[in-house]
Each structure stands twice: as structure tokens, then as C-alpha cells.
Image (cartoon, rainbow, N blue to C red):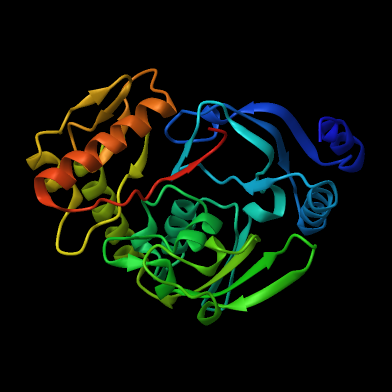
Length: 302
């Protein structure tokens, strides 16, 4: 595989590629070593070419969105990172259905549908990821989640096959979809919305945005909520009661604003964040008997 990047340049001609792209520029943590090759397909045909190349040459690959739920290790990622571009950033209304490309920012879709007088995605206005990433995780906030409005998805598989699946086929659960155990690229998603007064939908988004700004450390680089909520508990208070609010290892810090967040307080490495995560888990386990499960995806070469 030593020459696969040169081979990729030949086989993937016409598709934008960048060698050794720093993942710190693609994650909201602003942390992470380089990925061997970043590829940005503009349409389904280009995406299929990329997947078929990876399958033929045995090159590992992964999809990169906005990097909002991601911690990339300091040595970076081996293989190809697929960042959807072009038509995958577009969306349109088809009757009451919003049909969106998987690379589109979910928050943009939420605000733009509300602006047109469609309700259903207001809860997602502050979720800092893509449409595809939100489907992958069945993302949610403020008592809403993607599965409540998702009606169908389209996806491309490693053999180049292209499928359309109903939401009922996705095994949606708490922060879970079948795509977490299947190797596929979500390319589009359909959401069933309902008509609403534009002023009401926009007011709800303003309300949720203000709540988020007042409670979350949006001014600092982070990956959002670090741990899944354990049954019967709230993560932030558990960590705060353990005296860990503001606790720091290297450049990684438990947010002084919301203890459920770890922030990059300056120059943090992935090793700093991982050490802090394990310290928090150990302290909470010993003090409260609660086992915290990380929600942030950790990837890259160890």
C-alpha cells in the first residue's frame, strides 16, 4: 500500500484530493494529526469511484463531516477521508418533505426550513454536525431527535451499490443507527415536516439558541457533550459534584461553564483529552458507582 496515494492520483483524476490534511482543521476540538488523503467528491458518480478504488486497493476510508463529535488521535488517520461536497451540500423542499444532501450542515437546514414556514427541525438548530452525521448518530437535542422526522435515506456501499432505505429500516435508537455497524456512506436524507407560522418556528429557534449560548461553552473548541447520559443521572452535575469542574490535564479542561463538556483550553492534544476522559470516568465510578460511557468518537492511529 506504500504507493496507493500515487495510484489514487491516477485513478481519481478530476476529483479534488489533498495529501496529509491536518485533522485539527476539520474537527471542532481543533485537535488531531493528518489524514493520509482527503477526497472531496462532488456527486454520486465521483463517490462511487472513490469507494470502488478503496475496495480494489484495500485502502481504509471514512466519512468526514464537520468533526463535531470526533476526537482524532495525534498520529492522525491512515487511509482516505471522504468529505462530501458539491451536490451533497444542496437541499430542496418537495411538498412537506425536506430532501437534503448529507454534507449539509444540519443547523443550516433547521434554520432555513423554519424561515420558509416549515416546522419539525427546530430542535436541531444548534446541533453542530452534518445531515449525514446526524442520521448516523440519530442525533438529538431538547427532547427532539432525528428519528422523529426522518422518513428515508440514500446511501452508497463499498461495492458502489446505491440504495434507498425507509427510516423504519435503520434500527434507530438512542444515538444509534444501523450505519454504525455497516460500512456505507449516507448521501441524502428526507425529513417529513409540517407547515407552521414562520414567526413561530423562528421564535422557537431563537429560544433554543439563547438556551444553548447561556449554558454551553460555545466560545471554546470542544466536541460537544463528552458522555452519554446514564439512566437516572445528568452528566454535568455528576462531574461537578466530584469537584472536577475546571479540572485540567495539559490543554484539555473540564469546562468551567458546563462540566459535561471538555474544551481545548489551548494547545490540547488528543492524549490530553483521552487522559482527562479516563480520569473523569475513574473519579465518577469511585464516587458515585456510575459508569460513564463516552459519546465522542475516538479515531486514528494509536
